Image 1 (cartoon, rainbow, N blue to C red):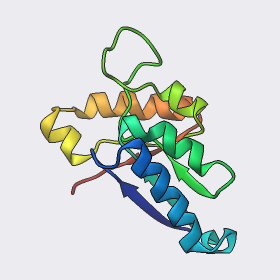
Image 2 (image 1 turned 135 degrees about the vertical axis):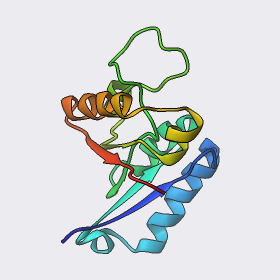
Image 3 (image 1 turned 180 degrees about the horizontal axis):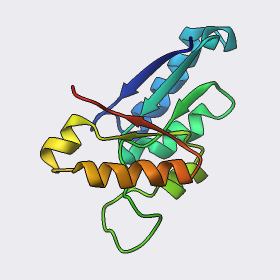
Image 4 (image 1 turned 90 degrees about the horizontal axis):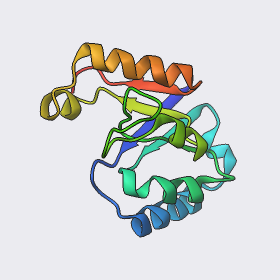
Length: 131
């Protein structure tokens, strides 16, 4: 059974902090053998997504956004695009975190639409259930 280690950075780590973290993490893990039988996922805040994308190239660190909108594109100011995340190299997308459900009142219907979009993009949804 593959183990998954995921870090949701919430609103923490500016792009420069994210770059430094990925670089230091790579040094500490000692290379590819560390990742045998496990996935390491990072879910940075939106402004740091590109920094993690850049720094995780040629590593086994996987990443994705903490949230996306339920449509591929359109006039949805302030939302994140699953398609753009995929273009950046994201493989996973966090969906339905308890904070999104509570603070932003995301409904089961909305989360279902997001999950279907993620799957249509051939990405993996990391669907949160409870706290």
